[in-house]
Image (cartoon, rainbow, N blue to C red):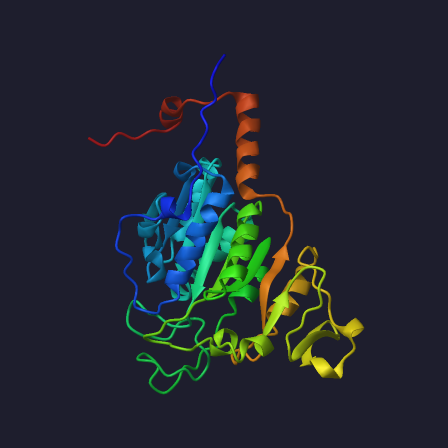
Length: 337
Protein backbone atom coordinates (compact mmCIF):
# COMPACT_ATOMS: atom_id res chain seq x y z
CA UNK A 1 0.00 0.00 0.00
CA UNK A 2 1.53 3.30 -1.09
CA UNK A 3 1.79 6.13 1.38
CA UNK A 4 0.52 9.60 0.47
CA UNK A 5 2.96 12.34 1.43
CA UNK A 6 1.05 15.11 3.15
CA UNK A 7 2.15 18.68 2.59
CA UNK A 8 2.91 20.47 5.86
CA UNK A 9 0.54 23.31 6.70
CA UNK A 10 2.15 26.64 5.93
CA UNK A 11 1.89 29.89 7.87
CA UNK A 12 2.57 33.52 7.02
CA UNK A 13 6.10 33.11 8.42
CA UNK A 14 6.80 30.46 5.80
CA UNK A 15 6.36 33.12 3.13
CA UNK A 16 8.75 35.61 4.77
CA UNK A 17 12.39 35.62 3.67
CA UNK A 18 15.50 36.35 5.71
CA UNK A 19 15.95 39.67 3.87
CA UNK A 20 15.73 42.92 5.80
CA UNK A 21 12.55 44.72 4.70
CA UNK A 22 13.78 48.11 3.53
CA UNK A 23 11.02 50.66 3.08
CA UNK A 24 10.69 54.02 4.80
CA UNK A 25 9.12 54.02 8.28
CA UNK A 26 5.35 54.34 7.93
CA UNK A 27 5.26 53.17 4.31
CA UNK A 28 2.01 51.44 3.34
CA UNK A 29 4.00 48.69 1.65
CA UNK A 30 4.63 47.06 5.04
CA UNK A 31 0.92 46.50 5.60
CA UNK A 32 0.39 45.16 2.07
CA UNK A 33 3.30 42.74 2.44
CA UNK A 34 1.93 41.45 5.75
CA UNK A 35 -1.53 40.83 4.28
CA UNK A 36 -0.18 39.08 1.20
CA UNK A 37 1.95 36.79 3.38
CA UNK A 38 -1.10 35.99 5.51
CA UNK A 39 -3.25 35.16 2.49
CA UNK A 40 -0.72 32.87 0.81
CA UNK A 41 -1.15 29.82 3.11
CA UNK A 42 -4.93 29.82 2.55
CA UNK A 43 -4.43 29.33 -1.20
CA UNK A 44 -3.20 25.80 -0.68
CA UNK A 45 -0.54 26.28 -3.37
CA UNK A 46 3.04 25.04 -2.82
CA UNK A 47 5.53 27.89 -2.56
CA UNK A 48 7.45 26.54 -5.54
CA UNK A 49 4.35 27.11 -7.71
CA UNK A 50 3.99 30.79 -6.79
CA UNK A 51 5.87 33.59 -8.56
CA UNK A 52 6.08 37.32 -7.84
CA UNK A 53 7.32 39.53 -10.68
CA UNK A 54 7.89 43.25 -10.23
CA UNK A 55 9.13 46.20 -12.25
CA UNK A 56 11.02 49.19 -10.85
CA UNK A 57 10.02 51.33 -7.88
CA UNK A 58 9.63 51.11 -4.13
CA UNK A 59 6.88 48.50 -4.43
CA UNK A 60 9.05 46.41 -6.73
CA UNK A 61 11.26 45.25 -3.86
CA UNK A 62 8.37 42.91 -3.05
CA UNK A 63 9.86 39.68 -4.53
CA UNK A 64 12.86 39.94 -2.18
CA UNK A 65 10.53 39.54 0.80
CA UNK A 66 8.39 36.64 -0.46
CA UNK A 67 9.68 33.09 0.11
CA UNK A 68 8.55 32.05 -3.36
CA UNK A 69 10.04 32.28 -6.80
CA UNK A 70 10.32 35.85 -8.02
CA UNK A 71 11.93 38.31 -10.36
CA UNK A 72 12.78 41.99 -9.96
CA UNK A 73 12.52 42.89 -13.62
CA UNK A 74 12.82 46.12 -15.64
CA UNK A 75 10.84 49.34 -15.63
CA UNK A 76 7.25 48.82 -16.75
CA UNK A 77 7.84 45.39 -18.26
CA UNK A 78 6.64 43.14 -15.44
CA UNK A 79 3.25 42.38 -17.12
CA UNK A 80 5.01 41.36 -20.36
CA UNK A 81 7.49 39.08 -18.60
CA UNK A 82 4.74 37.62 -16.42
CA UNK A 83 2.55 37.02 -19.50
CA UNK A 84 5.26 34.93 -21.12
CA UNK A 85 5.68 32.88 -17.96
CA UNK A 86 1.92 32.39 -17.54
CA UNK A 87 1.53 31.11 -21.11
CA UNK A 88 4.43 28.66 -20.89
CA UNK A 89 3.79 27.56 -17.30
CA UNK A 90 0.02 27.54 -16.71
CA UNK A 91 0.55 25.50 -13.54
CA UNK A 92 1.99 28.54 -11.74
CA UNK A 93 0.15 31.22 -9.78
CA UNK A 94 1.71 34.49 -10.90
CA UNK A 95 1.50 37.86 -9.17
CA UNK A 96 2.68 41.15 -10.64
CA UNK A 97 3.65 43.90 -8.19
CA UNK A 98 3.87 47.39 -9.64
CA UNK A 99 3.34 51.05 -8.82
CA UNK A 100 1.42 53.91 -10.41
CA UNK A 101 4.53 55.19 -12.17
CA UNK A 102 5.86 51.80 -13.22
CA UNK A 103 2.51 50.50 -14.48
CA UNK A 104 0.84 53.58 -15.94
CA UNK A 105 3.74 55.52 -17.46
CA UNK A 106 6.49 53.50 -19.13
CA UNK A 107 4.53 50.27 -18.59
CA UNK A 108 1.13 51.48 -19.74
CA UNK A 109 0.99 49.48 -22.97
CA UNK A 110 2.13 46.26 -21.32
CA UNK A 111 -0.53 46.63 -18.63
CA UNK A 112 -3.51 47.22 -20.93
CA UNK A 113 -2.57 44.37 -23.28
CA UNK A 114 -2.16 41.89 -20.42
CA UNK A 115 -5.62 42.91 -19.21
CA UNK A 116 -7.36 42.81 -22.59
CA UNK A 117 -5.88 39.37 -23.33
CA UNK A 118 -7.10 38.15 -19.96
CA UNK A 119 -3.78 36.53 -19.09
CA UNK A 120 -4.00 34.68 -15.78
CA UNK A 121 -2.09 37.28 -13.74
CA UNK A 122 -2.90 38.90 -10.41
CA UNK A 123 -1.70 42.50 -10.67
CA UNK A 124 -1.21 44.48 -7.46
CA UNK A 125 -0.93 48.16 -8.38
CA UNK A 126 0.36 50.22 -5.44
CA UNK A 127 -0.91 53.75 -6.03
CA UNK A 128 0.72 56.46 -3.89
CA UNK A 129 0.17 59.23 -6.51
CA UNK A 130 3.89 60.08 -6.59
CA UNK A 131 7.28 58.76 -7.72
CA UNK A 132 8.81 57.69 -4.42
CA UNK A 133 12.00 55.86 -5.40
CA UNK A 134 13.30 58.84 -7.41
CA UNK A 135 12.41 61.20 -4.57
CA UNK A 136 9.11 62.91 -5.24
CA UNK A 137 8.23 63.66 -8.86
CA UNK A 138 4.61 63.74 -10.01
CA UNK A 139 3.19 60.48 -11.37
CA UNK A 140 0.41 59.55 -13.83
CA UNK A 141 -2.07 59.49 -10.94
CA UNK A 142 -1.03 62.77 -9.28
CA UNK A 143 -3.90 65.23 -9.10
CA UNK A 144 -3.97 68.37 -11.23
CA UNK A 145 -2.18 71.23 -9.51
CA UNK A 146 0.11 68.87 -7.60
CA UNK A 147 3.34 70.68 -6.68
CA UNK A 148 6.35 68.36 -6.80
CA UNK A 149 10.05 68.59 -7.64
CA UNK A 150 9.21 68.09 -11.32
CA UNK A 151 6.10 70.31 -11.28
CA UNK A 152 7.08 73.33 -9.15
CA UNK A 153 4.16 75.36 -10.54
CA UNK A 154 1.67 72.51 -10.25
CA UNK A 155 0.89 69.58 -12.54
CA UNK A 156 -1.17 70.35 -15.64
CA UNK A 157 -1.81 66.68 -16.48
CA UNK A 158 -5.19 65.02 -16.15
CA UNK A 159 -4.49 62.01 -13.92
CA UNK A 160 -5.22 58.42 -14.85
CA UNK A 161 -7.98 56.61 -13.00
CA UNK A 162 -6.48 53.08 -12.80
CA UNK A 163 -9.86 51.44 -12.26
CA UNK A 164 -11.39 53.16 -15.30
CA UNK A 165 -8.32 52.28 -17.35
CA UNK A 166 -8.51 48.58 -16.40
CA UNK A 167 -12.22 48.33 -17.14
CA UNK A 168 -11.71 50.10 -20.46
CA UNK A 169 -9.06 47.48 -21.29
CA UNK A 170 -11.70 44.75 -20.71
CA UNK A 171 -10.17 43.42 -17.48
CA UNK A 172 -12.37 40.65 -16.10
CA UNK A 173 -11.59 41.40 -12.44
CA UNK A 174 -11.03 44.91 -11.09
CA UNK A 175 -10.94 45.99 -7.46
CA UNK A 176 -9.72 48.74 -5.13
CA UNK A 177 -8.34 48.31 -1.62
CA UNK A 178 -6.64 50.44 1.04
CA UNK A 179 -3.28 49.50 2.55
CA UNK A 180 -4.37 50.05 6.16
CA UNK A 181 -7.72 48.22 5.92
CA UNK A 182 -6.44 44.72 6.60
CA UNK A 183 -9.80 42.94 6.52
CA UNK A 184 -10.95 44.45 3.24
CA UNK A 185 -7.55 44.06 1.58
CA UNK A 186 -7.43 40.39 2.58
CA UNK A 187 -10.92 39.77 1.16
CA UNK A 188 -10.04 41.41 -2.14
CA UNK A 189 -6.76 39.49 -2.41
CA UNK A 190 -8.57 36.18 -1.89
CA UNK A 191 -11.22 37.06 -4.49
CA UNK A 192 -8.60 38.13 -7.04
CA UNK A 193 -6.56 34.98 -6.52
CA UNK A 194 -9.61 32.75 -7.00
CA UNK A 195 -10.50 34.53 -10.25
CA UNK A 196 -9.64 32.80 -13.53
CA UNK A 197 -7.97 35.37 -15.79
CA UNK A 198 -6.49 38.82 -15.32
CA UNK A 199 -7.17 40.55 -12.03
CA UNK A 200 -6.11 44.08 -11.14
CA UNK A 201 -6.21 45.47 -7.62
CA UNK A 202 -5.51 49.15 -7.18
CA UNK A 203 -4.22 49.60 -3.63
CA UNK A 204 -4.26 53.09 -2.13
CA UNK A 205 -0.83 53.19 -0.51
CA UNK A 206 0.51 55.98 1.65
CA UNK A 207 3.98 57.43 0.98
CA UNK A 208 4.83 59.18 4.27
CA UNK A 209 7.95 60.87 2.89
CA UNK A 210 6.90 62.41 -0.43
CA UNK A 211 3.08 62.35 -0.39
CA UNK A 212 1.89 61.87 3.16
CA UNK A 213 -1.86 61.86 3.83
CA UNK A 214 -2.72 61.63 0.12
CA UNK A 215 -5.55 59.33 1.17
CA UNK A 216 -6.52 61.01 4.42
CA UNK A 217 -10.23 60.97 3.52
CA UNK A 218 -10.33 57.15 3.37
CA UNK A 219 -7.75 56.37 6.08
CA UNK A 220 -8.52 58.89 8.82
CA UNK A 221 -10.82 57.16 11.37
CA UNK A 222 -12.92 60.32 11.68
CA UNK A 223 -13.45 60.68 7.92
CA UNK A 224 -13.40 57.28 6.27
CA UNK A 225 -16.89 56.27 7.37
CA UNK A 226 -18.28 59.14 5.31
CA UNK A 227 -15.96 58.75 2.32
CA UNK A 228 -15.85 55.00 1.67
CA UNK A 229 -18.63 53.62 -0.52
CA UNK A 230 -18.38 49.89 0.14
CA UNK A 231 -18.93 47.61 -2.84
CA UNK A 232 -20.57 44.45 -1.51
CA UNK A 233 -22.60 42.27 -3.86
CA UNK A 234 -26.31 42.42 -3.12
CA UNK A 235 -25.92 45.42 -0.80
CA UNK A 236 -26.78 49.10 -1.39
CA UNK A 237 -23.76 51.24 -2.29
CA UNK A 238 -23.50 53.85 0.45
CA UNK A 239 -21.41 55.32 3.25
CA UNK A 240 -22.44 56.95 6.50
CA UNK A 241 -23.03 60.19 4.58
CA UNK A 242 -23.46 59.40 0.87
CA UNK A 243 -25.39 57.06 -1.41
CA UNK A 244 -25.10 56.08 -5.07
CA UNK A 245 -28.19 56.50 -7.25
CA UNK A 246 -28.90 56.24 -10.96
CA UNK A 247 -28.66 59.36 -13.11
CA UNK A 248 -29.24 59.08 -16.84
CA UNK A 249 -26.91 56.41 -18.22
CA UNK A 250 -24.65 56.52 -15.16
CA UNK A 251 -24.60 57.14 -11.43
CA UNK A 252 -24.23 60.06 -9.07
CA UNK A 253 -23.42 60.44 -5.39
CA UNK A 254 -26.02 62.19 -3.23
CA UNK A 255 -26.56 62.80 0.48
CA UNK A 256 -27.81 59.62 2.12
CA UNK A 257 -30.58 61.49 3.91
CA UNK A 258 -31.99 62.82 0.63
CA UNK A 259 -33.03 59.46 -0.88
CA UNK A 260 -35.08 56.41 -0.01
CA UNK A 261 -33.32 53.10 0.58
CA UNK A 262 -35.09 51.69 -2.50
CA UNK A 263 -33.44 54.33 -4.71
CA UNK A 264 -29.89 53.34 -3.79
CA UNK A 265 -28.02 51.22 -6.35
CA UNK A 266 -27.54 47.57 -5.34
CA UNK A 267 -24.04 46.40 -6.20
CA UNK A 268 -23.51 43.59 -8.72
CA UNK A 269 -19.88 42.87 -9.59
CA UNK A 270 -21.05 40.04 -11.88
CA UNK A 271 -22.84 42.44 -14.23
CA UNK A 272 -21.52 41.48 -17.69
CA UNK A 273 -21.89 45.04 -19.02
CA UNK A 274 -18.57 46.84 -18.36
CA UNK A 275 -20.35 50.23 -18.44
CA UNK A 276 -21.79 49.45 -14.99
CA UNK A 277 -18.37 49.05 -13.35
CA UNK A 278 -16.96 51.93 -15.40
CA UNK A 279 -19.71 54.27 -14.17
CA UNK A 280 -18.86 53.32 -10.58
CA UNK A 281 -15.18 54.02 -11.22
CA UNK A 282 -15.98 57.61 -12.20
CA UNK A 283 -17.46 58.47 -8.81
CA UNK A 284 -14.21 59.09 -6.93
CA UNK A 285 -12.49 62.07 -8.57
CA UNK A 286 -9.24 63.63 -7.39
CA UNK A 287 -10.63 65.06 -4.15
CA UNK A 288 -11.56 61.56 -2.88
CA UNK A 289 -14.54 62.99 -1.03
CA UNK A 290 -16.40 59.76 -1.78
CA UNK A 291 -14.60 56.64 -3.00
CA UNK A 292 -15.98 53.23 -4.05
CA UNK A 293 -13.87 50.49 -2.46
CA UNK A 294 -14.11 46.76 -3.12
CA UNK A 295 -14.65 44.60 -6.21
CA UNK A 296 -15.98 46.62 -9.15
CA UNK A 297 -16.04 43.82 -11.70
CA UNK A 298 -15.73 40.03 -11.48
CA UNK A 299 -16.89 38.30 -14.65
CA UNK A 300 -15.96 35.17 -16.57
CA UNK A 301 -14.19 35.49 -19.89
CA UNK A 302 -12.04 33.12 -21.91
CA UNK A 303 -8.49 33.26 -20.57
CA UNK A 304 -5.56 33.84 -22.89
CA UNK A 305 -3.44 31.18 -21.25
CA UNK A 306 -5.99 28.40 -21.83
CA UNK A 307 -6.72 29.67 -25.36
CA UNK A 308 -3.04 29.50 -26.31
CA UNK A 309 -2.62 26.06 -24.76
CA UNK A 310 -5.72 24.84 -26.58
CA UNK A 311 -4.48 26.19 -29.89
CA UNK A 312 -1.08 24.53 -29.45
CA UNK A 313 -2.61 21.18 -28.55
CA UNK A 314 -4.89 21.36 -31.57
CA UNK A 315 -1.96 21.94 -33.93
CA UNK A 316 0.12 19.19 -32.28
CA UNK A 317 -2.77 16.73 -32.62
CA UNK A 318 -3.11 17.58 -36.30
CA UNK A 319 0.53 17.97 -37.38
CA UNK A 320 2.63 16.44 -34.63
CA UNK A 321 4.99 18.05 -32.11
CA UNK A 322 7.22 19.57 -34.77
CA UNK A 323 11.00 19.63 -35.08
CA UNK A 324 12.90 22.84 -34.34
CA UNK A 325 16.01 21.65 -36.22
CA UNK A 326 14.00 20.98 -39.37
CA UNK A 327 12.26 24.34 -39.07
CA UNK A 328 15.52 26.25 -38.80
CA UNK A 329 16.92 24.46 -41.83
CA UNK A 330 13.84 24.69 -44.02
CA UNK A 331 13.40 27.16 -46.89
CA UNK A 332 16.01 29.85 -47.41
CA UNK A 333 18.82 29.69 -44.89
CA UNK A 334 21.88 31.84 -44.35
CA UNK A 335 25.22 30.91 -42.85
CA UNK A 336 27.40 33.58 -41.27
CA UNK A 337 31.05 32.54 -41.08
